[in-house]
Amino acid sequence: MKFRKDKAGSPEKGERKAFFKRKSFFLYLGLFIGIILSASLYQTSVYFSTDESCMMCHVHPHVEDSWKLSVHMNNKSGTKVHCVDCHLPPKSNTWDHYTAKAKLGFRDVWGYLMKDSADFDWERMSQLEHAVTYIPNESCKECHYNLFPEGISDEAVTAHLYYEENEKKLNLQCISCHLDAGHYNPNYKHSKMTVIPGMQNRAAVDTSTYFKEATKVSGFATFKEQILGTPLSINMIAIPGGQFKMGSDEKEAFHKEDESPAHSVTVSQFFMSEVEVTWDLYWAFYASTMSEGRTPPEMVFANNSNPNVDAISGPTPPFGFPDQGWGGGDRPAITMTHYAAETFCQWLSKKTGKKYRLPTEAEWEYAARGGTETPYFFEGNPKDFSDHGFWRKFFDADTEPISSFVIYNKNSRNKTQEPATVKPNPFGLKNMLGNVMEYCADKYDPQAYSKRGGSATDPISTEGTEWVVRGGNYLSDASDVRCAARDFTKHDAWLKTDPQQPKSIWWYSDIKGIGFRVVCESASAIGN
Image 1: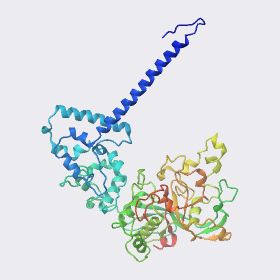
Image 2 (image 1 turned 45 degrees about the vertical axis):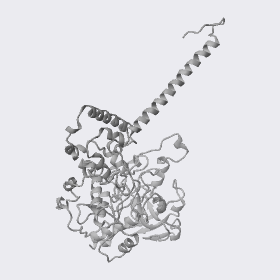
Image 3 (image 1 turned 180 degrees about the vertical axis):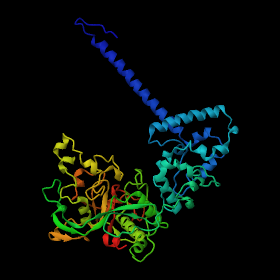
Image 4 (image 1 turned 60 degrees about the vertical axis):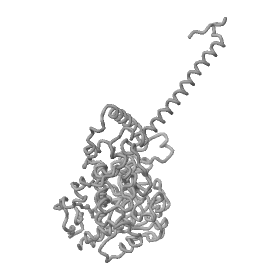
């Protein structure tokens, strides 16, 4: 647009003002129309997400009755699941949700207008082969974050655990076993489960590779412990006894008061597991000791504290996914309580005839150092690796060589990793630093070192209300994975969001990077 110019060659102010006024009007008008259009589209989307709108096209005769009789509608919790909750990807994945909704909508409207529903084979369309194409697995997981609700049977717990650990290999969806969850069918059977080893058809499991006896140990040397009744084993590293300086002095970077005074400690020889207890091992323990229902904590404590009892009460079902969806197998088992870790050791002792337990804090640090006296068992200054400090605002921390030995905040990708991702320490132990914090047998006492008088032999602290944890985890800064760094459990805080009453004695709800490794007393092993 051209403006008339005044004598000075500039557009007349009145015309220029009128132009920008018209421009602003059209801009605000477009914005207003856009808001109205967006709101209309949203309200239209909301309407076409209702059960009533779905029923406009889905006219197969049994759908409404079977849906209202299903456990998704007819249950004690009061939860009502709607059509879109099961048949569309979850709304948290906005793009997938709305694109799938558009595709299904166009197809359903076309079918409603152009086809005769009387010609449909409703029986065939009710079968699993058809259902799997209409139930996104992500939608099932969106609602069922707890696969182990109160009252679940032992068989169902085992099945869910097996599915969680082998989901990719099985290539099954949740609907494969729960076809009747959304539409009630009194004649439905969990037929798929009978062909999955380890579930209901126990006879289908090949037990030829299962160990029939524990490993015989004749001398003090590294050995592989065989777990009776399973195909699993644990590499137990022989750790020679010796003397070392426990703790750190004030000259060590990031030294903390509870690491003082550095003092001389002598430890006897022992065996320590090469890696943290894995999910494979922990689920074997779980399956072997599965509690019947929800055993009251006082009965569990009484049972497991009795050395003469034959049966060991194991964990009740966890609330949610204890592996956080990161995967099982060789990854370290996590989120169990200190009590659960001790019970695992008791179970392992009965399985093998040896004395298995958690390491003392002194044994743990001695093993972690691997004969070294530096902050780590490899070369390097914590200041160079840590993100703490003024210079980190300008320069990145070093990641070599620490990333070769430690899973920490710089290389973990915010989750635990398999043992194969790191190199061992001089004793042949992996993940002593980082990955998961590890339970010790000691109670946490910030003054424990000063009470030892400068030296000690096989010490263990029994004073305190929390337990010692060592090593740091996958979220730790390099300063917190030093060999001398100490930490402790925060029992109440780690159970803060546990919805169960009483709160679980087996599983923590608010800590992810906690696990453990086991120690075998040499006398019990060699005398086996």
